[in-house]
Image (cartoon, rainbow, N blue to C red; front, side, top):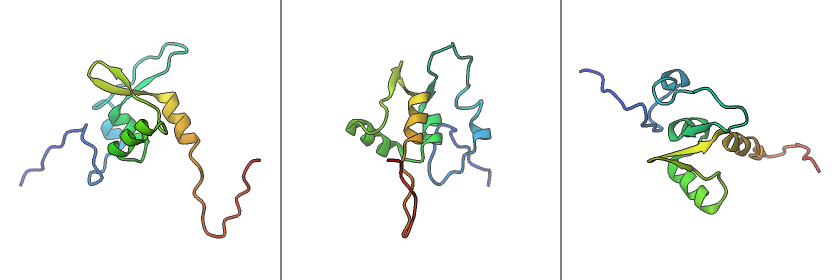
Length: 103
């Protein structure tokens, strides 16, 4: 039986997608103007953020995730806002964990 082709934009938990497969097929990084934030499409944002799109949509409505920017018919996110959001996630606490938090 021939292998079924999958749309590279369709990201689902059952499919393993690596950055090598996505680069050049889903998004193509372009030259960046100095001081301008890079806009990343939905597929790249979902690759960076380990959450489902419906969860992200709900978080955007609640104001706990950066809002998308409309670019034509597509939704894009500012890469620096996504990176800051990821960097500010709290560390996972474990039972009997002795992590000293900054005061």
